[in-house]
Amino acid sequence: MNSQTSLLHLFILLPLLGCLITLMVSGKKEKTISRIAFFITGSQLLSALAFVIYWFINDHQTLNIKDIVLYKTSDYEFYIDLCFDKITAVYLLVGAFLTFLVTTYCRDYLHRESGYKRFFLTVLFFFMGYNITILSGNFETLFIGWEILGISSFLLIAFYRDRYLPVKNAYKVFSIYRIADVGLLLAMWMSHHLFHENITFLKLSNDAIVSHHLETHSFIGIFISLMILVSAAAKSAQLPFSSWLPRAMEGPTPSSAIFYGSLSVHIGVYILLRTFPFWEHQISVRVLIGILGLSTSIIATLIARVQSSVKSQIAYSSIAQIGLIFIEVACGFENLALIHFAGNAFLRTYQLLVSPSVVSYLIREQFYNFVPRQNTIEDSLPKKLENSIYLLSLKEFNLDFLIYKFVWNPMHAVGNRLKFINVKQLLIFFIPAYLIGLFFLYNENSIPEQIHGYFPIFFSLMGLMLVLKSFTERNNVQMAWLLIILNHFWIALAVSFNEHFSPNETLFYLSGIVGAGILGIVCLRKLIAVESNVNLDKHHGHSYEHPKFAFVFLLACLGLTGFPITPTFIGEDLIFSHIHEDQFLLALITCLSFITDGLAVVRIYSRVFLGPHVKTYHETPYKSS
Image (cartoon, rainbow, N blue to C red; front, side):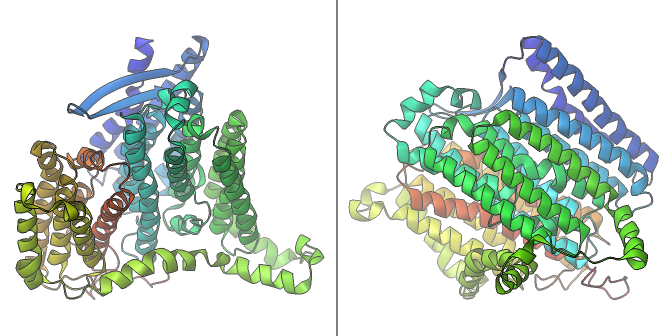
């Protein structure tokens, strides 16, 4: 058992080793880069195959290892937990085989592409995040892999970073991923209060433990299940989030195949399978998942039938199949769902990899031998209904419009109403207000009990105001960055009023923010010194002339969003543990602040360093390209 659990580290360390080695190789050495990727993914495939066979022969029991304790206090513990069972085995083998297939395919496909090294580096980085996700034994470990998948998705969709459309769609997909983060963060928060620990998936599969905790907390159980469903639906492009998947096809065809045809898009299914024992007896949740899957399958099929792009057809076909897998999971057909996942992943990867050849063949075939279809299923419907369905399908059922109307437009509207926030207002009002808040924090006896309970909400709203202003800022890029930093300070102050905990925990959380914030400000100031006109009103594409600035600033962005490279990643979970289970409003505001600051940070990075170059002596692609 010990030898088996120790081998689980290999599946995470191999891609990490590939990333580090590739990082040190010159971008001009294509053969060396492709050989590293070939060797790493090939070794991973052989290791996974050997491990699964050995595990299956030796009674195929569930393996669980409490790996590394990263942070511990008297009432809180953040640790890495790895788990291996039937679900992990299927995802591991499918992921290893398809990643090996795609990296082998790309060795020649991307020959002489300017981002050759960047592509293989990002794919290996994604592969590491994928393995962390599927091997995770608790929500905290899963969230590490989840964040890596999110940022690698953004980087691969924006692979052609000198074009407007890939950068725009990369940001759109990342924004949907942040909605998935909301669900997962709130599920983690409430599960801490329900079980009074960082519960492992192995314990979740224990029916006695789950039933005992849900007996008197049925509403909390439904809330956690719904948040898990929101995360799964957003990650797997189910309604109403389906429109992001075709937009993700802006990246190179191989990355579309491995990300959005096979592996990343099925992570939502993985979360449902992994947490199934928790919501198994919640009939209302199971019915809701089934209805969601059925609705998505029907609508995605209708949309796929009218698409003019082969990639969009494949994307919506994949969404429809994942909707069916959701139904299978809700019905408790775990084995069928795993077989369906593997079949759908292999089929979509194949379809996407051959799609360029299929398109050229069909164009030639239709030019010489086009025969219109005589009868279709829709012809059996009344003509008005048929036309209405056709127009709705053509407009993709206005899914993009709905997301903009009910999610992004309200955020933009609030942010635009905060135009009064500027550097002067920060110095006159917000910073003094923060200092007064600190004074009251250390002199709580002077606060009347009637208003003490409102302080956390008030201070968290102040932080949310600042980050919404940063999200809509168009002129002063340094101020937008500073507002994000201040947002974290306001959140720390708000939660500090909840209960008395060690100031070291707040310092631990803010240490990563301060370090990443200073690094980002230094990068921006140096860039502005070289390129005087830097704002957020349009894309500037400065990564073309300043790639080192772009890379360092990207690291600063990751640190500021709580990516698992600074203490802030653990600090965010630590801060959430001090929000009480009856403080839904405070938890929601804090969660929105974390999510919006991620969007604001990536917006700054994409506007400053990605997109068509602002200087006219560089070649500028068409906006539609």
